[in-house]
Amino acid sequence: MSTNKTTISIRSAESLIVAYYSLTLIIVGSLLNFLTFLILCRSAFRDINARPILHYMRTIAIFDILMLYGWNFDHYLTIAHDFRILRYSIASCKFICFISYFTSQISAWLRVFVCLDRYLLLSCLYKTCFNRSKSILIIIACVIIGSSLLNLHLLIFACYRTKSGTISSQAQSYRIYPLWDYLNLGVYNGVPFISMVILNSGVIYRLIHLHRTTKIQNSRIQYRSISITLVITTFLFLIMTTPSTIAFAFFPNSDLTVLSLLDGILYTYHITSFPLYFITFTEFRQECIGMLTCKNHHQKIRSQIPIRRIA
Image (cartoon, rainbow, N blue to C red):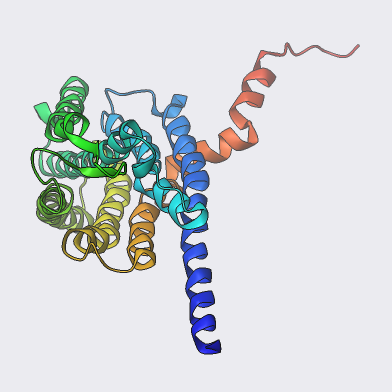
């Protein structure tokens, strides 16, 4: 009897750790991603024509914030307060289902196009049509629209009230799950996985080639640090997000704590942009320190003060 009580208390403790970790991800992740977005909007990064890839990086920061308020938020409420947003109302059920798939797929595919942008810039001596600011904005809009249309049926058909009065996340006319989890595995992980590996392999090859080359054009040196940064982030994406997607697709009836833990690892990736940029991206680090210490602001004020000779 005492052994059973000990087992229950251990499980409860583990569940609470997972729950409050999800809450921590929401708080810390929102702050770090918002800070990332602010830094990427500072004066040093305003020359979009020189580095249009910043469009991707800013958009990813926004959608990484939105991701945290889907299933991740539901995990916290379910375990800590025994309250499920999916079961609260039909509107909240539709919202959680849609935003969880919608934001994750956009985040993944924007990273694919980031890899494509890096590969093309390192492979060509000039900017292609895919590396121009207007083209990148069109690509981002197409990704958002495409993901919206793909998951639109969740807003229309998903979630209904059963005869017993409870809310089901399925649809009345057809079964959404587990079919949609299988599809999400391909859209969010499978195809992006293959695309990122192929493109990142090309990026790594080009970086090694540039490193061995004695004469490197200055216009291409500036792409090296940001390329290394984005190669690291995309490989972390593959490692940290795949286990959770596979678990929910093929083992949806597993222990809730285990599934939430895997989801916690997935969402942890989406708050790592700031520390990775800070460590590997020199200009980002300099701008961050400058913003936090108000260095640039003080320099501007100081330069505007007229110098007067003391009599």
